[in-house]
Amino acid sequence: MSVYQFLYILAAAGFILALKWMSSPATARRGVLAGELGMLAAVVGTLIRAEIFNYEWIAVGIVLGAMIGAPIAIYTPTTGVPQRTAISQACGALASALIGTAEYYKLHPHGFIMGALIVETLLGFVTVTASIMAWGKLQEVLPGRPMVYKGQFFINMAVLAAAIGMGVFLILNPEQSQLYPVFVVLALTFGVFLIMPIGGADMPTVIALLNSYAGLSACAMGFALDNKLLIIAGALDGSSGLILSIIMCKAMNRSFANVLFGGFGQVQAAAAGGAEARPVRSATAEEAAQILEMASSVVIVPGYGMAVAQAQHKIRELADALTKKGVDVKFAIHPVAGRMPGHMNVLLAEADVSYDKLIEMDDINPEMANTDVVLIVGANDIVNPAAETDPSSPIAGMPILAAYKARTVMVIKRSMGVGFAGIDNDLYYRPNTLMLFGDAKAFTTSLVKELAAAG
Amino acid sequence: MNYEFGLYVFMLSAFLGFELIRKVSPLLHTPLMSLTNAISAISVVGAIMISGEKDVPNLSRILGFIAIVSATTNLVSGYMITDRMLKMFKKREPSGK
Image 1: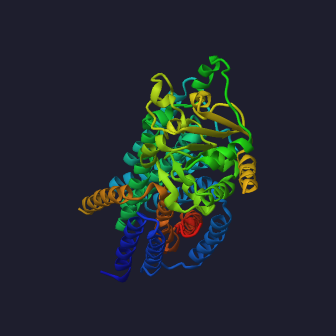
Image 2: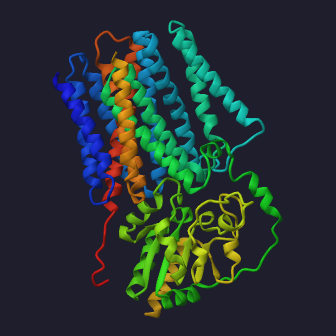
Image 3: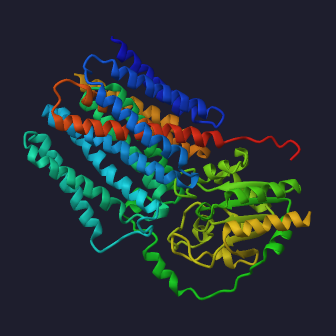
């Protein structure tokens, strides 16, 4: 066994420890270090391999990549983390796909290796364009609403079938290299088509799934290059992405197929149009501040609207002001709040909220009935009681934060507009609900002021 | 039969991955995704191999070079932002506040 093989084994151990230590915030940074050392061992191990002769290109490439990557990591705001993940995934998948392509033109392989290369490049190229599309929707360069048209499902399936068919043909006839570019174009096209019908709020599931594809592509590369380290790292990523996307689907009570082909949030918007205007109760910042001050327990429910308004720092000030007055303040985190799994936690951690105040849905729901005030900031569908009461609702069966059970519910919202699912929220019309109309950040600022004035 | 061995490695790693990820607190799902995203940059190993070997056709060398740049971008930004996010997760003691 040579030195590089030993380093590869250390690298695999590093990646496994990295994931293991992510289990708790106390050890998570150690996990990142383990992952970094693992990657270092993998790169050093590869550089000292006997087959490597040409170091100039490698050095230039690594320096260039670091120069692009570091500023992205330093300057991306926490609200932009989902976009960064998407674009970074596109880079990783591009690398994987190009390596597969380079190997194909270099080796002209047959049989099993050719099969592995086709799987690698298919997953790689699909993930490249799909991740760029996801980035576009998250960055709002592209419309966040699903883009749907008649027969879309069949066209998507036809493109996928053509890509797979071409791939199989190339596995059987690897010398037909003039057809390889056709295969590449089909895979890239399918990536675009795959994301078109998916709406912005379904991105948590999609990003997790693409993460899984990128991992599996690296894994297939491991089979093509006969490299166990790539197989291990790729399989860890593949299972991680898959688990997260399953968690996200469960948190919306929807199937994979429904997320991927649903065009969710488009059809229902029209159906909701028939609802008549119903009266709501609204309150000013002064009135709301008084109620909050009198409460003994307050639960804050953040949603994507909080991220859009950049209100997380003001929300933390509000929580601090209430805590100072002896109010017990907690945050209730729905698994699909935001644009990425766990997005709200990062935003609130950035605003310096202690992480033991961030409570998961299953743990906070039993406490809701004994909560004096639930303050909802920029969330809608995840607190809609129709999920529990109305079997015909598009979100029927979706687990929700049981905000409606609290003694008083306050909702900071710009207007009476509908949420992502395009349906009305019965919660707003309940007698114990107060609507606080305004921008999340501006309204929270005035709440903090009112509390300070009350002394 | 080397592929058979590879498939065993794949199967065991996939199950290990499922067990490890299931234990990750939902609190940390975003950093977890950044971390696994960074780990998927392991493809840099393949990129180095293809760019560094002797007698590689020019097209493959160019593709390998682009692959090194994009895999390193993925790698560096992935690890750095994961650490940046995790640094923000703090537990404040309730003393005196």
